[in-house]
Length: 392
Image (cartoon, rainbow, N blue to C red):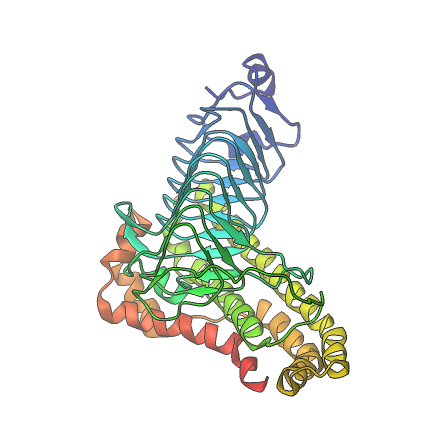
């Protein structure tokens, strides 16, 4: 059991750094022997249990009520109420697990955002994604064991974040779940609609934009052929998916600022929400940087295509992207500093409608008209951020 002094923790085999604020650790939190607590930004809420299966390192993370981190390394991540991870986890900055989102053993996450109830199996590498879908712990989006999100290309770029479900639909907890079959993978940047099922054992290399589809990924044709690293072909889809992803992160940040704040009960809740907003800002900055890195690779690509008889349309698109990137970047950076408040009618109705006990139950309690008003507000933020696609 957590004690109120560092000395007693150490006697129990728990390392607590001097810069940890003890007032940010709940009296009833349980930290098992061998675990380490680090960082002045760390906050551990009531009912949390750390290191039940193996030692846990928690560094500058914010944990809500009843979070269970069974073993592994957790740095710069945010865990809302009831989230949990199995042992062997490696969870890095920019990651957010919302209510009851969870993973089994040996899961690696970085800048990964899981909306409520999303479940990950074991032996998964799932970095640079946002996943939504599902309505409850019995009806949730799931990623099968031994799944990989491929987020680094042969061209050495990481403009590859993937969207499974989306924020305007996912936050209202009323969409069908997504199922990614085990022993498979997804090549980013991709968009996968709610209700999608990707069969086990394959690597998906395409978007699934229509809901309620089953995709059985094809096996690429075997062989060896000429390939020039750093040369892109069509980039419209890559740029579009990146801008839509950025728009969804902006929308989720506004949801946190305008809706989630209504459910703050104490300092632990405040710490989790503040940490969530901070991580969303971190993700935004990273996505804009990575898209800029991609723009910087265009000159070599279109020059090579021109010299080697490449597709003229691809050349022109790449030139337009490179030339328009400074304006796109400035537009996106400006949006990072802006607020996009909801319609007044939505805010007023929300204030009347929401019970305060449970965030997920309150959202599910919303009447359809309020949901649709909120959905339109969030979708407007996404559309505004992705408007530059029309100029490519």
